[in-house]
Length: 456
Ligand code: AMP
Ligand code: ZN
Image 1: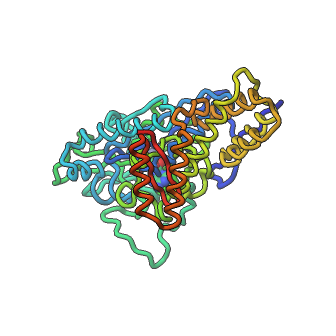
Image 2: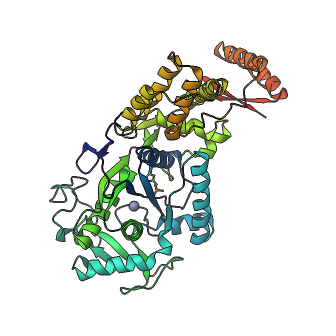
Image 3: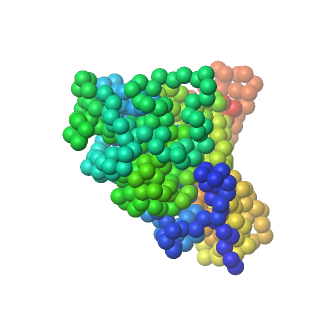
């Protein structure tokens, strides 16, 4: 049976395109990593789950994937337009710790979240602060080719020198539309961006000498320099969140095109945002951490399940009800799988349908819906199990794990009774029942109209 072609949406051409790698059976994948001045929020984790799913799909298609991820521990300013303070220095001041200490702390916390969500680690993780020399050399090449100019506060990339600038974001070539004014400081053009910023009068914790003066690298140069170091001047796929399209990836492309004469990656892929109350989730502002979900009685993989229910190229509005639904569905699925015998065969028809969905630009919602078809099919239960465990090599939901926290029937009956009392508006009685359930060793957590139960 032939495997359906892997089709991926390339933001560059705004279309689905058949994927084939530059080198047979090998894929170079670069994913822009976290800025480690705070905990990752659920939105950031959605983007990394997208990267993890992409990687698993590539592996299932027989590719050997070299996955490189940077850690932005310097140079990402409060505004993506090169203004404001460095997020690391600002975070350090707020938390009364050194920038180096918070970088180490939040990087470690980020990896804990990746592991809790069953994400495999990158083949290479590289910190911006460990690659200052590579960034300086990259900037020197741009300077030698005449793409830079210096101002009072740094060295800038001259976007007017690159006619192709802004292709990814389909930016208006004239730059500003008439009538719109933005403060561009000493920059010559509003799309120009910093390659190296000078420390200036404000003392900085992270700074390095350079041919242009003491300072620190701009945010975009770190990815271009490290991607080239670990994946070469041309590789297969570059990924990030949708906010990277107009500035970060646009500027990464410009630097590499100026230096090497071609676009660095074949495919540019972007994960769409997770929202809360229809607003963008951000570290500063409306935030939501994986820890908060765990504190509310959810297991991290229920969040992974929730992410699978929507396509990576659509916005997902987070609700506790949806998460409660995801947890219930996941637990039910695990109970089913663990009740079936081992030793079955993967069904070739369902396998092929599954690959058809995931190879169609990672259509996880359709692939997840296929699970119900397998359950309802007339396959032998051992074959159903083998088939779903094969699906799980991509889903990563630990479907083979026995659901050990199965709630005894008498407890479940009390929980259902309490929910009924709540619906009837008898809150005092419902609260008393909650205390009674707790005395029996189970904690009930409410999430809107749903409840979840955790064994204490
Ligand atoms: P940062 O740590 O801010 O550099 O972001 C890390 C990754 O998370 C980047 O790829 C961002 O594009 C992505 N990201 C930021 N906010 C969200 C969100 N609300 N939903 C999904 N991805 C996001
Ligand atoms: Zn990047």
